[in-house]
Length: 279
Image (cartoon, rainbow, N blue to C red; front, side):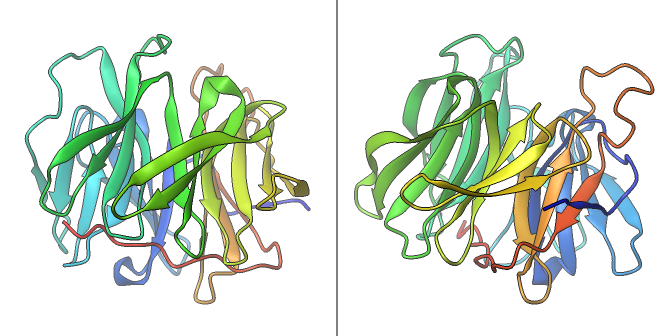
């Protein structure tokens, strides 16, 4: 299957797409520009600057959004006024990266060193009361995370490992019993889980998104017209469209002309509704 190009190359490093009806549709980030981008029904893309870095965005249960900035989180109200919270660390060598929301409404957000130093990053859990706990340490590039439809499993990528991991998950115990779901030919980046339990993973540098069954078997591939595929999410009124972000970070002027665009595919399965952050 071939994805359709949906936008022009509107971002330098597009990441973290998220569909939420309360926003009117699709939002994603231009990470190192510090901007949140929005696609309206007419196909117009608008952007809102939120900080030096905008690493991910998810809806809040009470309205608005939670956004990962360079070293911490921020809340945006329904008018997109941004209120940064206290930074989660002091060093400027490490920044926020991707994340997701667990079935209990807790936010799981990761980090990475700017120089991608091995083991310098972590995955954090931020509870509804904004308490912060480290749930995985010695990570290198903490990336996509999402949960199975029944909420008992979590899938996670630390990109340089070339592996998709799966964990048992419960509200009381969190992530436990981590093991390898699949070895990837390339670098697994953002991921999302569909309503049938399939795991869709963006392959950075590979120009594709791969679907794996819950047992790890590769069973579908979507080809994307840009090499640096960063993340994907289901959206549309019926959650039957897979939106895919791409990046032109590190590319020369004129190289890979579609890099930085958003693509869309209709793979014949529906996604899960995103879980809003309860904080």
